[in-house]
Image (cartoon, rainbow, N blue to C red):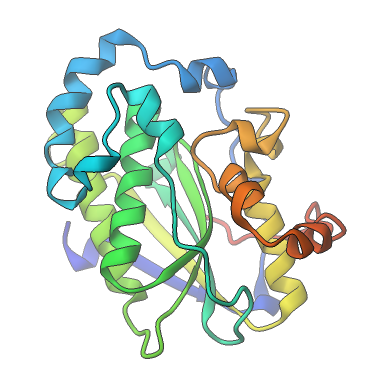
Length: 245
């Protein structure tokens, strides 16, 4: 993927424009469909998994794709949850908002690639929600963090190669552009943290966010400090605006 193919747009917190994101097809909605990997995808999935293998921990591998989704996750809790001028919410979309990550296998690869890429560049992942045609993440930069563009570029290039291999659609453009916004206020950060964690519910995919395997809600519920969880439960997110992608 060329640098020219990856477009980036910055926004300030004051310049958010509401975008009613495209609702995912209801055919993808049942949680059971997301958690139950169809055998038709298994062989193809295992073939392209080799592209990700060098970056995996052998001990974390499961015996089946379903087990991998449920047992793997982002295991590094942020040292500090709100640090001014170092936290970013990033939203990215596929080209023409096509539903290219339309199977659990593809979403699993996107999620694993996100974990690997964030680690590679020394960033910390606070929240994520991955869908068939877009994603939202909240990340914290390292002390000298100027690598967000490279991080996103690597994530997009890597996942484009894999999903195109799965679809036998080589050289197809997968990603369109992304927005990143620096979060400078704690209340803004908390509202967006809540928004990202609950995005699967907003899209009607699940009734409880933690039941969706491709977002941070379950991880957050298990690992975030109880006081933060209590505070977050009082923070509304239904009026949060996200950039148009």
